Length: 163
Image (tube, rainbow, N blue to C red; front, side, top):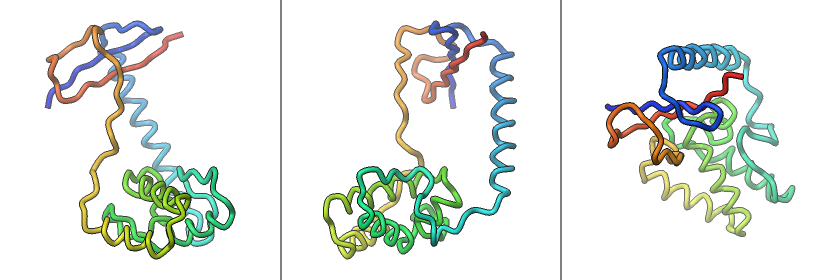
């Protein structure tokens, strides 16, 4: 696999330095330790929670929210975790499978679909493979200096401010 490195400082792209790359790695490891400490706390009970991590209930009435929560507590996540969708959202909020599925349930309820229709769509969806990653984020880097091959499969962009 090939990599391209860019560093943006005060809105300008500069050449990367070993210190910045090492600092990024150290900060990433420190963030991982913080996530591990946070994961050590017992999660709240997903069967009774009315708000789930990264699930946007805006525009949903109280009746629709109850309907959505009932579906999320009944349907299984297809990421391979053997948990219900609501359980997966609480115990693994970074799951890239349960998040779009929860959004799809909300969209279906807002569209007026019945619970039976939504359950049927989940049965159909379970037979199809889910994407492994979330869609890539596009960052405009055309014309910026870089290190590595122009046609690399992966581009790493560093945004930093040393003030």
